[in-house]
Length: 223
Image (cartoon, rainbow, N blue to C red):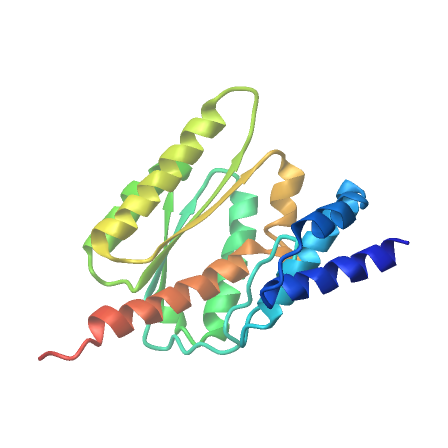
């Protein structure tokens, strides 16, 4: 029953696209479906319309991420890493992930510089100090904030994220917000180890953005 209705509705949709209007029939057929079936029909129509566009990505109701380029050559990049010492075990796991991805992207070990701050709140100041040196193509700020019983978590998260962003905008320098903001220690452990290590993605992002900065600013030909 539902299959026949959906087939009829899709046929009417084709007619409407071609210029034939039949709103009363369309409405009656559509109302015969349950709300769930109507939603699925809408999704199918949207996906079908988008698939007609050349090279259009497939739509999905699921949360989507992205994949970095398989190979990025960061041999000429200098990367600064700032590690908060609070929750040091988590930070060290993130750092290992960052280091792994930087080296796999050909960033030289002697061009990877690491400094420390007491906690996440101090990350923006340290980032500004590194940016002021004009030695770096990208900066990665590593921290871990675990929600407790007070508003401290919210205040520090907001201050750190806003401050790091402002440094990047002020100096036209990629400054990555590599700070985990989690509800418990278990969530932090999951995100600093194995294939779920967020540091791996942050390292690759630093290389990609560092190369973009070089392309648009450093390597820009002089007219």
